[in-house]
Structure formats: C-alpha cells, structure tokens
Image (cartoon, rainbow, N blue to C red; front, side, top):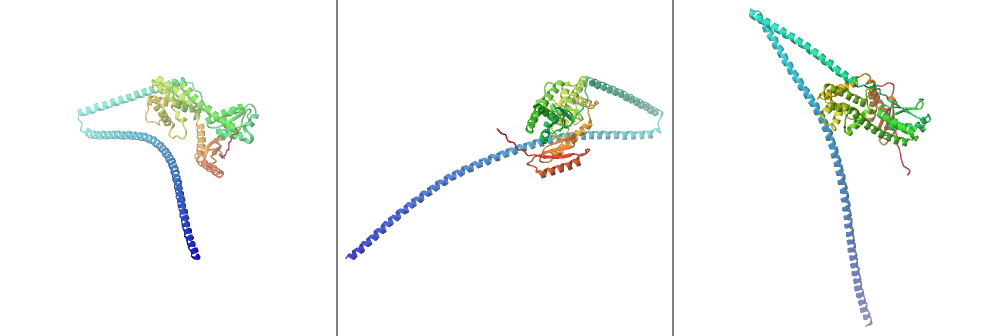
Length: 509
C-alpha cells in the first residue's frame, strides 16, 4: 500500500504545481497586457502633442509666407503704378506732339486750298483775257471807250496799291525804329557786367609746410580728397597757394570749402577728409537755398515755393556758354520788366516767367527733353498761372502757344545772351566734352562714381569692389578707352584710371 500512496501523492503534487504555474503565467500576461496598454496610451498622448506642435509650426510658417507674399504683391503693385505714371507722362507728351502735328497738317491743308483757289482764279483770268483778245478785233467805239476806261481804272487801282505798299513799308520802318528805341531804352537802364567763367580756384595756405600735410604720407590725403570731391588738386611751385581744377563749379566749390576748413583745423587724414567734405556739401546746399532767396528778392518777387527755390539756387553754379545761368535769369527778368513797362504788359507774370525761364537747366541730367519744356513741366507743380508756364516753355520756341509776356521774356533772353561778352561758346563745348566723358563711364555696370580730372586729360573711375574684380577693372578700363576713342574728338590723349578699393572700418569705444 505504501508505494501506491506515494504515487498518489506525487500525482497530487504535480497537479498542484501545474495549477500554480498556470495561475502565475496568467497573472504575468495580464501585467504585460496592462503595461503594453499604458505604453500605447503614452505614445498616443506624445503623438497628439507632437501633432499639435507641428500644426502650430505649420500655421506660423504659412502666416510668414502669406505676409511675405502680400509684401511682394504690394511692392509689385507700387512698381506697376510707377510704370503706369511713366507711361501716362509719355502718352501726354505724345498727345501734345500729335496735337502740334495735326495743327500743322491743318495749316498745310488750308494753304493748299488757298493755293488751289488762287490757281483757279489765275486760270479764269487767263481764259477771260483770251476771250477778250478774241473779241477786240470786232469792237465798236463805245466798246473801245469802255475798255479804255477799264484800263485807266485798273491803272489807277494799281497806282493806289503801290502807294498803299509804300505806306505799309513806311509804317513798318517806323514800328521797327520804335521797337529799337524801346529795346535800347531797356538795355540802357541795366548795367550788366561781362561774365567770364573759370575752371580753377585757388585756396591760400599759411605756409609751404601745409602742402606736404595736404599730400600726406605716400599721397594718401590728396588721393582721398580727390576721390571724395572729384576735383583735381594741383600743388606746384605757386607760393602759399593750392589750385583746384574741375569743370563742375559745384564740386569745385565744395572742394574749396572743405580744403579751407581742413587747412584751418590742421587735422588732415582720410577719415577727417570725408567728414569735412560731407559738411561742406551741407553748407553748399544751404548756400543754394540762400542764392534762390536772394535772386527772388532782387527781381522784386514776394513768394516762391521752397522746392522751386532749391532748383533756382542751383543755377548759381550752372554756366551756359560761359555765362552764369542765375545771373542771366536775373538779367533777363530786368530786361523783360523794362520792356513790359514800355508796352504795357503784365509785369508780375514777366517777373516770375523771366526769373524761372531757365530753371530746367538746374534739373538732373537724366531727364530727357529741352530744358524749356523740362522747366515748364516742373513749374506746373508749383505755379498756378498758366501765363508763367507759357513764358518758361516758349522762350526757345519749344511750345506752340505764345502770349505777349512770353514774347517779351523770349526777347529779354535774346538780349541777355546776345550782348557783347556775355557768352563764350568754346567753354560750353569743353564742358560738354567733360560731361560726356563722365557719362560714358557711368553707363557701364558696376561703376559707382566717375570724375574727369586734369582738365579732361584723365578719366578717374571708382567701381564697386563686390561687382568688379581686378581682371574686370582692367577690362573696364580698356573698354572705356576704346569707346572714348570712337565717340569723342580731343587733343592729345586721355588717361583712363579704374580704382577698385575695399575698406574695413571699425570704431574703438
């Protein structure tokens, strides 16, 4: 019995172990399932957080893209509006030209009709004469008397016409003499000096030692001053003086003022030179405004728009055929006012029209068209009087409308420019050649500034170092030299110098 008992006990132990193992495995599986579910929930929460962050970032980027797109659209819309304004201005100019052309065509058509009518009348007279000659052979006494009377009547009429022509000639001579008397009386009331333009200025210095300080170590000071002003600085054996040479009187005046301040201060180095040149530029701008105000007071005007004053003051540094344009404008105004008093024209209109008639010469060179029309278009913004605009536009016959005041301003302009010693044509040609040199250089990409120095014997060009490398600078100098040879006529040779400079500036505080 004892072995059987042991067998039963063993079976019972095996069954109990199997049941315990089953319960342990089932409990472990449940724990693993719960852990897996917890991990899934955590992953799902983390995915939702990342999804929200991604959505926020996408929304932010979309907002930035939309803002940039709106800014670009706004900028393109502004550019389109500017282009539309330019096109509108071109269309207005074209319409004016078309109107002038149509008016001329109408006049030509009227002349053709008059010519056809006269031609038909001549043909009719010839046919009538032929018929009359054919009929003469069979005339009666009464008919002969009638013909004689008609011939006498025609002779008397011809004599009367001849006397009328003589009277008209006498009246014309009398009116010409009267006009000459008016012009002489107007000219005698104005004592005008002869104007001579110079392309050099002299700056006095306290000692010969100052010349070395102006030149600087290895010439750095004089190069910096020439680059900043575009003026050729001549330091020679002239005692206690430095000469400035430049065709542009504005640049020359800025350089003179800047060099005078540097000499008085004593601190001469490249950074100081740039600072003083900028201050001199501001002083010249103030001088331009003061020159405009003084010219307005000199001719007896009371008010003028501030912007128009600036353009008028620029004429102080402009020359036309060697004649200062601002002095010329004042002189034209005085001539025209004297004539207006003689003939009874509107003096107020003539004062404004005469003073502003050459204001287009003070505009920038990039504006196209005759200076009379440029000035008229400019003053349409500031002048309410149409008569004044006509005086400006008509003084060189660039406008199809004329008035008595416009004719008087045009006459005053001719008197001022035609008096002895007023103008020198050779200087004007020289200035145009210098300006053409600088414009040729500026037409190339990458050119920042260009100056014609050494009286036009050297063209100095400053380029942007980021746009043109060293090899490009050499090619640019060669291309500009070839173009100058093909475009201009000049004595001797012209040196083309391309300067490529890189600066690094820091401040110690």
